[in-house]
Length: 147
Image 1 (cartoon, rainbow, N blue to C red):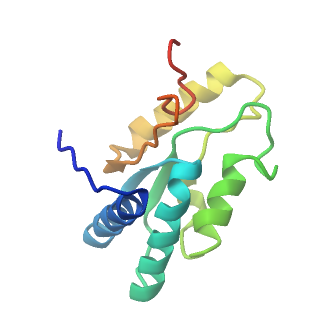
Image 2: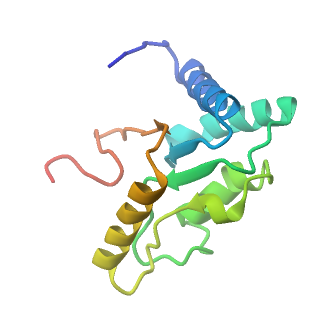
């Protein structure tokens, strides 16, 4: 594992955006594991700037989001579906919607949904690069400390 200390959140966000961009530009069938939340706002802002500047073809890029809120419809303004649309997919609208995967937090059976999503990742993967934000209390993807 390589650990890089970039000093500030701004530098770290730009670095992560560059790593995502590099992956996509070197492999046009990349599988990206994406995250949400405050940590990712600047990452996606920088990534959109890079994509627009270089007009990268992302039509074959496939994404898998880390998480979603339980009980929220995908169109709900607080859902991670909405977050991803606002932060990335609407800002650079050249992604293929059929290749953008986010768990269904409103599924009737959440156990079945988690199995379905895991099978999808196993079938389509492996994920080439996974981005994970760590919350202020150390949580990763709704996995709270002590759980």
